[in-house]
Image (cartoon, rainbow, N blue to C red; front, side, top):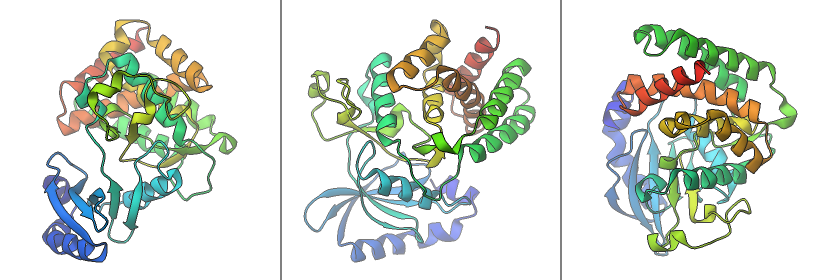
Length: 309
């Protein structure tokens, strides 16, 4: 988190962080606890509210693009459905007081098919029409196209030209298909590290329960955190699920995952496929820059394999 803050030019924010935490704890009547050491985009600390409720205080690293305002907007609109609950917030200080949840889905080692079902249901639980001021799918696509072109060259072409061309063509296709009439609120980064368990014993996770989107696969036992926040067609969220688990994707027929997600959510498999092509390359390059291996290389290898289909 310190490295991210310094890279974003937020050194003064870092220096003032102890005072900011102290001010918020006084104003919101919180008792601070342990700090989460694995956070990268924010300072996150356990707190206890005046009424004894466990919570989390999150202070986002200041950076361009109003990420705090976007995250707060999504959580306010979700009101605890599909996402963690938001108790208090301060947009100006980038501060959120959130429901304290349990381990991530990744830490619980759920099998990939079960993860996919739960994450699809959680994403769908969030989708709703809104006139909120959030970035659109067009904004996301334009950034991804620019990033792919620039980073692919700067990184020494870590995947094939065919994979890049395919991703850029898919991005252009989704940009042309932009339809405000189908646009809904969405999370924007639905994956197993962003799905935290509700406070239940891990042994209960195998029992049947009605999920958040009406399915019996346990979505109600998880909530999404850290939303990017954007307005887009539903298939945009599902494209993230096409980029995740790249080894499993290329182990079989990659199109089968797109068709399965479409059938579960009542969406378009071609749009899901195209969003997946974009997300796989863009995120593979982002993770390469960040040094997140072997996942970055696996995503780009999957992009290469799909480009040869």
